[in-house]
Image (cartoon, rainbow, N blue to C red; front, side, top):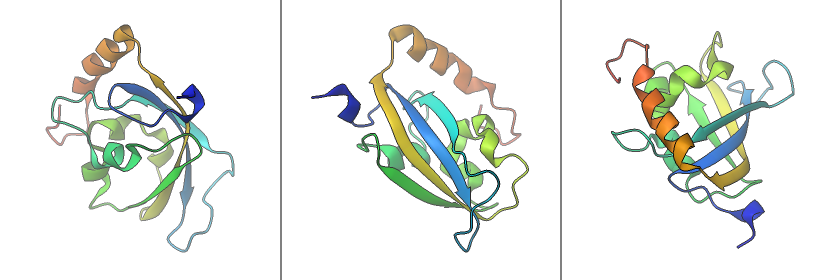
Length: 127
């Protein structure tokens, strides 16, 4: 299988281009997509709904999620504190996440990602 078409799977480094749209589909902020990279599936509690939505997607494919105050933490779980694009945004919004790259994560990357999962400071008790 050609690496540029490798599907998203656990323990892969996934790179996304994130964009926000308002409830009516209108663009929010700059048109440029925000890059976001993480190792999928490293949390001890399993994968988040956001990670499940990305499973088996290949570069070029996109998922869209409606983010509200009520579902924000439930969708992202341990990844939420890392998502700078959501800071200061008035919810609800639609998050468009386009997969730009997928690669198997190196063992060191996996260990570092697992170690960083416990660093949540959102006050929800998820750490």
